[in-house]
Structures are given as structure tokens and as C-alpha cells.
Image (cartoon, rainbow, N blue to C red; front, side, top):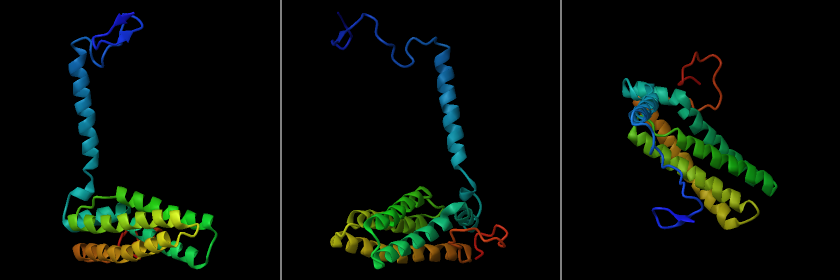
Length: 194
């Protein structure tokens, strides 16, 4: 048995080539150039309308792109958890609405950052509380009162944080944003209609 350069035995004297080693010298610069090109294209794709124009136009673009709907979705999810618990639904039904709250909060976190740092911080705090509330509710659904109390406390903190974020959007844009989870049919694409 042959030994490799690292001193460990090899089954054969042939070892696999390291990535890029043994390539013709003319191919290495081409691979580097391709990596740079694709990386640049990927970053350019991240520069959307959210990052150009006035602060109002940037926030408008972010709201239209799903930010407003995410806020509304979490508000609805929080109410659904409250309803399921108040009606003493079966643990499986409670877990379902709790898991939805967590999932939607994680999706909302994926909508961040916003074009405004303060708005991003306000929403991040609300979304983190929503995710924790969903997790604690899910774990406590079988009757763990301490976890259910903690989830309720986190949901109570989430609601005013979302309200502060909506207020920030209104202060920047001059309009109350729609947090509807459905598109209004007669709004003509206006994210502030509704």
C-alpha cells in the first residue's frame, strides 16, 4: 500500500486531483473569470427597485414586494393562535396554527432588510417574537401552561411592534400601507389602497 503526502496509507498510488490542480493553465483564468461574472450577476440581481429612488419610493417598492402582506399575515396568524387556544382545540389543531405562525415569521424575516434601517429593526424584533411565540405555542400545545403563557406574552409584544412598523411606513410614505393578505381587486396595483 502506498502512502499519500499526508502520511496516511492509500489503497493505490493514484490519488484524486485537488480541485483545479492539473487543469490546463489556460482554463484556470477562465474559471476564475466565470466565477466573478456569475457572482457579479447575482449581486446585481439583488439591487432591485427597493434600493433606488426616494425613501418613499423604496419603501413603496418593499411593501409592494410582499412586506405589507407579511405584516398582515402575522397579525392573522396571531389571532388564529389566540382563537384556537380560546376554543380549547385539540393539540394537533393548535400545533398547526402555531407552526404556521413560526413558518410565516421565518418567511417574513426573509423579506428583510427593508430600505430603512429603523423599519428593519422594528420588523425584525416583531418577527423574532412571532417566531418564538409560534415555537413556544407548538411545544406547549399538549398542555404545558408555562410555554403557552410565554407564547401569549410574545404574541402580545409582537402586535405593538408591528403597529410601530406600520407607523414608520406611514411616516416615510405619507400613506397608511395595506397589510392585507389579499390583493384588492379595484386598487389598480396601489399598495396603499385598502
